[in-house]
Length: 393
View 1: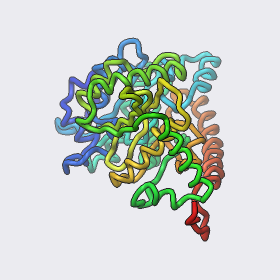
View 2 (view 1 turned 30 degrees about the vertical axis):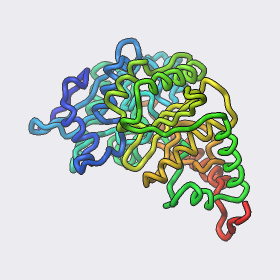
View 3 (view 1 turned 180 degrees about the vertical axis):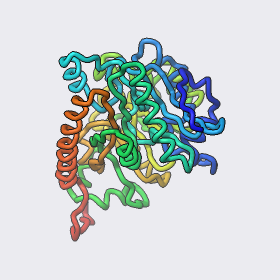
View 4 (view 1 turned 135 degrees about the vertical axis):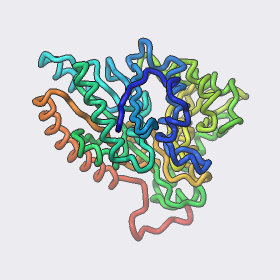
């Protein structure tokens, strides 16, 4: 018999039990495909107060058990707003409320503040179908029992999007810019795949950035010290206050990251006279480098491109990683080797009329996104078939 339940804190489930669903691949001793759904990452958000309290993200983690064993789980949150999701439904909320309904609270299956693709319906091997169905039906039942407007799952995988469609979820397609590793031996090998003009531009940008008057370091694991997190917090506050008004993560999250997430982390720091003046925070999956936050206390030309994009590519090549996800938005990434890539989310709305209207909108939106991806890909920086590399550039 399958039992579905909610828990308000990850303290209520052992890490090994959660991770057996979230990242069963780690049984071979390697890293997870997606570090963001691990018990340690989600608990760092919870323990640091980045979720819960007045954040508008109230944890309601969902568990599916069979025979006393957890076979599926999901990072589920009750949301009182639509901030920190990166799949925008503000227009839906406004329309819903103009029609006399209460859009909030809603249920969100997601990793808070993290627009990175990964599994959202976390199942043990062999439980993909039954576990996903139980999680979806469970979330919808919770919404119905409490009179909530909707259930959303953001940045799920394409496979999950296809599977969940059979269980009544509407599929939304968005786009990001990702870099794919073409089996390059080194950064010069990547450059050789680009058109001459783009190749020269990247070399110029890297030279400009490297001339900022200091050094650029890549730090992972035990190379990362508490003082480095002080710098990351300063960068994060600066960027967050300009983009969002109030940064989502608390200062304690970075202390939690130092204690529990260093092995999942790559810091790129630009130091001038030994003082960090800019940097980028990345997280490491088994095959993917996830770019998350950038900030700077001083402006230096092209340093953003170097720290966020080129250093990430260089690290990924050296580590044999398949791709770099550079986060939300940013067509400027296209000229730097990051191509438009479809991302996926799932939605269920209780009101049938409103759900039908959204379904029609999503159908038209998917066609528009597909067309935009095709057009933007055509403007990519890579050499066209038959184009020879210029040995003089």
